[in-house]
Image 1 (cartoon, protein in one colour):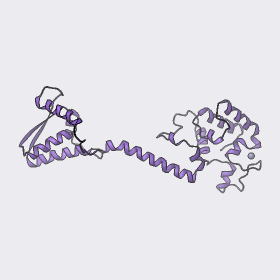
Image 2 (cartoon, rainbow, N blue to C red):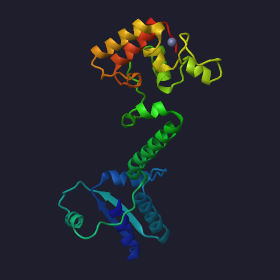
Image 3 (tube, rainbow, N blue to C red):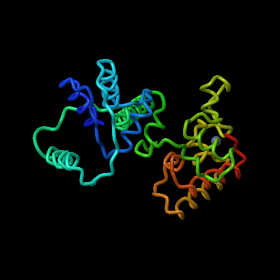
Image 4 (spheres, helix red, strand yellow):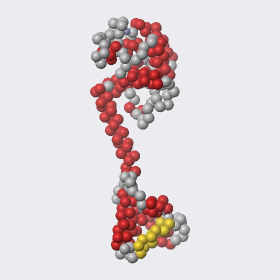
Length: 248
Ligand SMILES: [Zn+2]
């Protein structure tokens, strides 16, 4: 595209009445023939189209001809040799990049800054989330996209991770309960529900043993289990809640 633009420029500089531009790039010639622009059109294509328009305005008739590469056309072979030589000589040409070339880099930087800001906010407003969520695993799809479990399972894990679950501690914080104490008299937060409550003693012991037998790293931190990407670990947590008839 750049070479065709330069050829048109040359025809304009020399005030040629007619010019024939021969190219082996069918895709470029078809793009010029379509003449469609949108926000993704690169600046080189825009420049070439503008030059064609200028040629029409000053009365220079320019035709384009496609020839398959290596067709033993003398001028085309010379252009090919010069193009290959030019690739390795001198400074790289100062050619502006288009949106399509810039977008991958921009997208990467955008994701990087979004992630940094996300964890900065988390550190102030959701300390547990910022501590235990694996930021390097941030992807464009949800973790539960390929998890074959009921909606209730997914929502319970999400609530546990976000901390917005119906523990006495959370309900008290939201002003929905007078006290943050569990029925057993101790602060009813997530750690207490899983491993501290005397009401769930035997189920807690079974959960601890099951997590150990599943080779979950000891000593067990309940938040590491809640934020685990292992489905067998999440299954054990949900089994515990079902067994203890706890709805979070
Ligand atoms: Zn309790």
